[in-house]
Image (cartoon, rainbow, N blue to C red; front, side, top):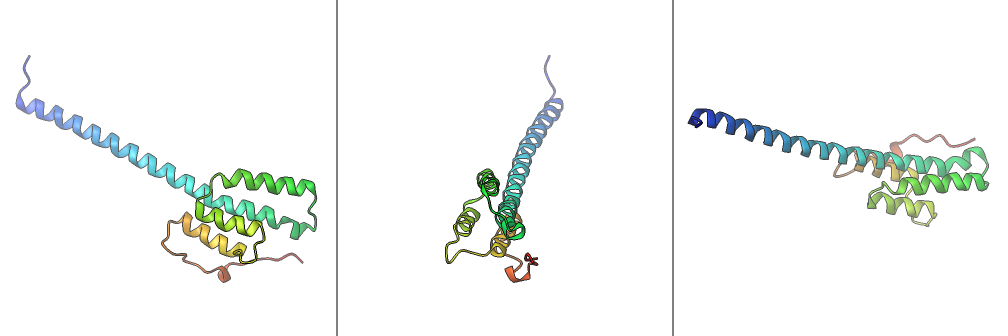
Length: 131
């Protein structure tokens, strides 16, 4: 059985469209997955900083607190991009020129939203210090 040029063209067009749609679907899925990982990584900065600051609020920093901080830190640094990791390492080590927690959060927002430059300043963030 021989296909007419019209039928062959329809089948060929259908196959091309299906392949194109499949490739686009794979690409979009990859981009969505990449964006989700980036969001989780940026949000993990907050988990680490919040655990690090907990002792200022609870007035307690015993071995259990250290273990919780260390666990939160190790678990979350696996997700961070290099720029955020470098900032966080300096802050957690209390290096004299380390960025503030607010500066790190501003940078995490920049990464999270894929901004070329931060759209807010650290001094614009609210902070409720312990009493």
